[in-house]
Length: 129
Image (cartoon, rainbow, N blue to C red):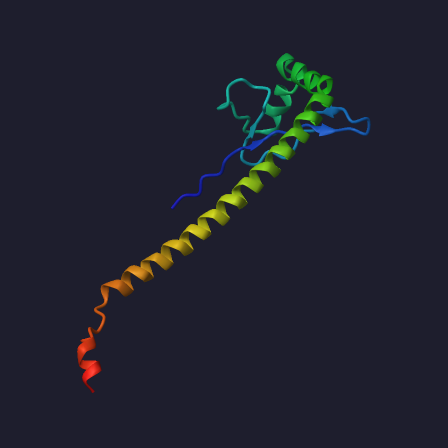
């Protein structure tokens, strides 16, 4: 059995002014950069990634991140709200599912009881004693 390691995704650092900056991490299993339109482009070594971050595409991407910081924050808040709503929906559906399981279990027991033969009494015989 062979273990297949996947490359990490590059995340730029944030400096003390709150701006995105490049900080080359340790490259162990390769590195994907979100600035690349090709999702299969992987940088296997630190030197290859170092050359990549000097490319015009990457520099433009970092500038775009810094220009849209406020938008990313708003998007983060919206995502958090969406996640909270989805958690509530999942919890409600889990509760409904549990209730339906209990109903099914109860009805199954009722059907099983009805299938077992019940003793038959002749009420006229009871009266004669």
